[in-house]
Length: 181
Image (cartoon, rainbow, N blue to C red):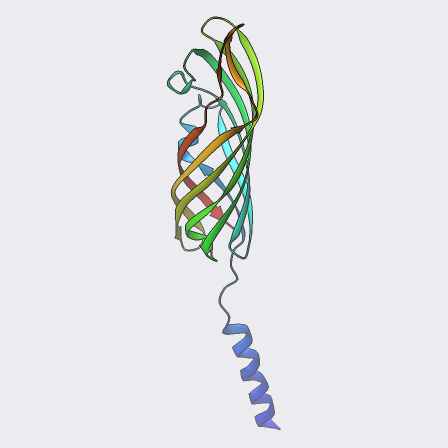
């Protein structure tokens, strides 16, 4: 009988103590390079994510009052609010190292051209994101990222009535930093 309890105790200890720590599958993050395009403190970029089996789904919210050197050519001001939905597949199931996935961005921009014309522009962009994350103690992560976005629909920057330009595609380098829970 004593051997029976010893065997049950060893089995229980193996199950309880022998497992790896559970994979942390949620967190918050920001892109440090996104903060550089807006005037501080009224600009921000923050997101939350939830992961399942190597697929990390993120919702990122940002508001930017763009600094002069990041304005589209021909504009005096641009205040933009963005919502970005991303789904990134990690080849490492612990949400680290290389990832790749689709992105859908909505932007609401209030712009003023150098010619004095005001414009409100709402549009969607589809894209692809990639990057490489380094983890510290499975708690904090950081790494370079790259997102390419392409406009959906026929939207235009208007400098003045009759003077416009199609919305361009964008290539956005980044430096992600985040915390996992």
